[in-house]
Length: 282
Length: 301
Image (cartoon, rainbow over all chains, first blue to last red):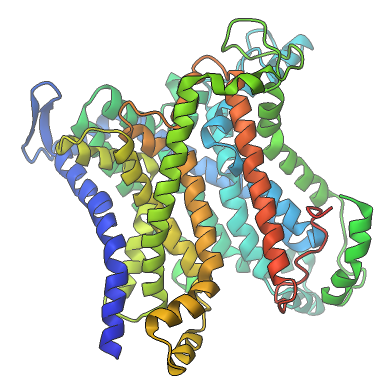
């Protein structure tokens, strides 16, 4: 009986896992192999164990790599600062409006990611609704602009990833047993220390999940930088996309992809260490 | 939000609400106002999209920057663009096909993970998370690496392969979350009463986990329709809706992008609200664990 059940389990697993192996694992291996090749699209590529490409791409793209990491960090912190009070209010004060408010938070998901970003480009345009009006009022000088600056890219990233931060925070805050706060109150804890020592501590799994859901896609994003940014806001995703799809420099793009993955893995591991997540997520 | 809904719901609220807290917890105005501001901020680009689909544009096509009056003409013209129609058709076909395949494959994995103990279970759990933890640009680039090195032409099929791939993990995680608390004894009971494992699964287990499967399918469909990055890498010359949007919006957002965005937005919202109402109707008489589900969300009013 037991053996039969185990066999059933393997049959259930095989089709999906085969798909993931064929189209996730093998492509990753194939990319690793391409990163170690040399050549050009015209002459073809040859596998040469060209490990030297890794220090090369690191040196060539250090600015974009650092910028991506920095943007990812800023976006994660900013979305957390914006989303925490929001999630807190919905979870603790939402009452009968809880479901409506949550629906409002995920409302942007009903619009295509690309359209949302384009609407920000439209909103922030040099003569657009916001800047054009402020210029007419004389609040801003005629030459003032936002598009192409880091602030525009960061604004787009923060907008697009805010729900990813707010939802896990809400789930964690919603789970908190309210009687613990009453207990803290009964034991003469001040409101601030009850928040810090009870509420915030217990919401850490949400902080962790929200940070990952925001940081990973933000670091790898190139759409916001493409539509809202300029030459000084190029992120590593833009370089990968350009090398792959325009310059057809496959080895460089493949190596960069691995650097990006390794960087994210390193950052996430470090973050988990700091928060002590083994205990958090059990 | 109508007042009569609020009145009608009051008894339920009163029954399930915790005993009233005395004035101990101060109720400031700051957090509610702040929440309103953030919600307005989240809605801002959506509002602009809806509004500028009605813009009576006089100048050259593509420069949809200032408000020039109200018109419905973009709505009547929207299917006149052959590229848009074929892109939309591709998107919906790919989304439907990838949803069906990924939901089937992912549900099977989720069932294996929640209902069976086998060697490699922990490893499989970890493995399922990997595609979700990989940035989209890397997923797209690595698949393209494979297709390039095997000289596979990019197009409809390669997009479909990619979408099934990234959807599987999301389906597994969603279905797993809904089946975790599932009581395997019910299925055993059916078997004790003479049902074959096959019959027991389809008559007992499947109906119980079907809300989770449905949720996973909806998520998969939404992810597929919206995907730009992975599709861009593996599309060749095939157009999907997001690719068309990006191509049409080089020099500003043309009205037809706003119009299509608005139509899809309201279709999605209506479907979501309808499914919430439907679920409520189904579970109205079931014992509630999570407080009053109806509590005046206003959708009914």
